[in-house]
Length: 456
Image 1 (cartoon, rainbow, N blue to C red):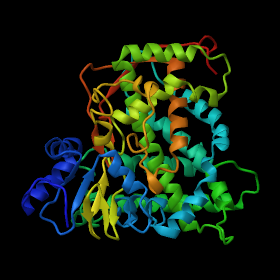
Image 2 (image 1 turned 30 degrees about the horizontal axis):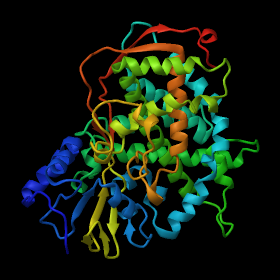
Image 3 (image 1 turned 180 degrees about the horizontal axis):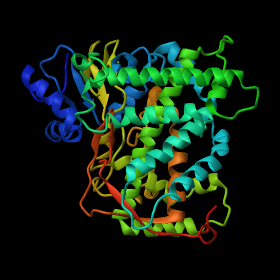
Image 4 (image 1 turned 180 degrees about the vertical axis):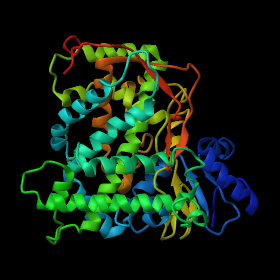
């Protein structure tokens, strides 16, 4: 089997590298990329090769391969622990296609229009609590906004006992993975031991079980609710597959958890990074504010999200620091040739989103925040892939962008934020995502009168 080059590591060195990847993933994958190029192998002494690809032609071959060539869900044990075995992210073949079809209608562009006022109002509520000249951790505050939005959109909840319990439990679980070390139990089976409520894994299991119970109770309540509802839960209860079969409560539970956990976590980090880069690059902030003021008062929310420079700022944010640095791993099921390399069953093909987004030949000055690059040319889905690609592309990507742009426009129209520290911030691991450090502080310098802002 012809395979690409990579570092020759002993078993001990390989284990050290695994720990290094968990603690500092970006530098760990950049090192072999710089030495071996855009296709490299990271475990040269293993009988199950692990190969990184950040070559757009190779990515196209992988994303467009016949469905029988690769499998994906079985390699995502970490996600199973978080989201449940029925999550769309873990399904294969016909079952994956069935679940994806059932989940598509809630994310249709026409339906997203219904969420615009909700997103604006919930964002404004949180902004109203920000005090002028009082520093606060921006990621935590943005998490409050995105969590309120995802609860409203997915469950139709914004108050009540179950809402408060769920909100606190989900926040607790995500905060327990707020550093590389605290989230290591997700990656190693030997750490997944239930030694009672005092052990990290034990605490995680107990919180997860409480979340399961609350979500199932919410599903039952929605079934019994005779009123018309427009939330995603209600749409999933009505959904039927081609055979006329509904989703089971367990399937709905796991899909709701996927949206609640993955949906708000990724948007939170992306928005925090956008605010960071907007403050770090004054010219970007100036252009963005100028564009926002061109809109008439009471502008349609969808019109706001179609502003070209606002869109470019969001795209560049997702390029420079993608929250998910790798697409879902593809495990070879049938022999396949990718860019001249013969991959046998068991080989893991990993498309690196982060490394692709930092190719100098595609993105000149890749470490520099330049939204204009997205106004100057179109990038293929194999060059720009913040939401993954192929049949595994994030099903909620359109809503994620809609929410990101509308929240950002709302914040900029209502206040001026400044970073407290001038020092550069780097991404840190937060569970399975890359996020801004929790100690990134911002401060409100002034608030604007909405009636004079030219928006909403």
